[in-house]
Length: 282
Image (cartoon, rainbow, N blue to C red):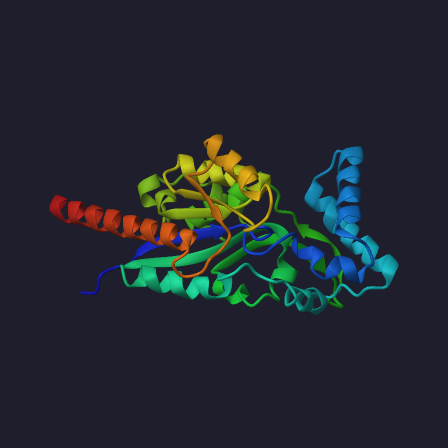
């Protein structure tokens, strides 16, 4: 009888984690003729004035600025812009390599995106197909395929909801009953201790803490060779929010590669031991 693979999930932020900066800055903001600094300053101001959700504000502002500039906002327009995003070193090859490493050790790894960025832009990146599920902010499109208003805003607190959805295999966003249903920890499809969360900034803090406190692995990354980047990320370690801080270099044999592979080995060993204990109980 073939051995059942141990389930494991790796969840990632995107902006600053898998690619530098915010995804809108690579092409969308230049297309509408505004600098990143000016756009985000306006977002911050509107958020404060209206006491609003920052993600909803930036998505609404994207549509208003695009309309004023005559820039199309169809789904395919957003997707085309995703192809211009330059990913961090090693990211493109990372997913297949890590998935295969797990498979050889009896661990089935699924990758998940949990991001405040735009799902439609991310869809155009070369890594979009590597994810079992993408949880990111997205627009509602009318009958002509044009974005008209925000349909889903993923902010720093709601991000944790999606980790519970992974934990309970409750992926239908229109159904809140499944994710809120009581399920004994031992009966959840993907235990938190079999989860890794990789992020870079303050919006990742609730996810860092949740995964760390529930027995999983939390990793903060920073942009390599950037002044002050490591010190900023190191604060998360100092505050007890993450297990480690590493450069966002996903190349084979680099630091994050070694750390995640070591954790896969831990998950495999723990799963094997649990299986042996269960067999003895029988």
